[in-house]
Image (cartoon, rainbow, N blue to C red; front, side, top):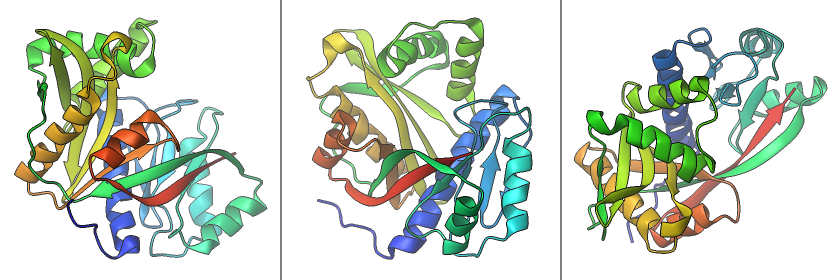
Length: 259
């Protein structure tokens, strides 16, 4: 098993930054919302009013948070009347959670953040980066395999296309008997590979394809010189068990607070 990264607080800052920049690149590709705002060591990323992808990420990691900082986040993310989401981890400066409590923020959901050092292991299945000509296949498959339903609107399709096209994002396909049946996404920033968006069609689940996509992206991360790989799951899910089987360990929990 690859060694576990030391210094959890520094690791958290790096991983949260990588996640925030992936969100911002996807926003920029679609052209929705305003450019991300730097605030108290993190980024407030707006994908537009009421988008579930709008959030403040990495705020208060290593720096205190002032009342004016939260005002700035709310002005940026709340434009248009949507909810304001701020992500908090155990290493967040207490000044942020104190201010959010004063303002009446409530817990929306929890995630577990996972990490390991990248290494090169055979994926054990046919997994590869999607070619530009396969963009439509990736988008349709992402909707069915990851989101659980066919694409519902052209607006949704446009959003998924931008996710695949965003600078730095790498879309993946898992192939079974010559047919794409699984998708995944990866990006790299500051030596951190962020693994996300993995899904397999129901009929092809239980055959190791999720693990194969993890291993393929770990090898990609190693080839990019990354010293960390990270991913997020909801607690107790099949995705968590896949990451554990692939040598990931939980780095820290994350709470999503909303107002």
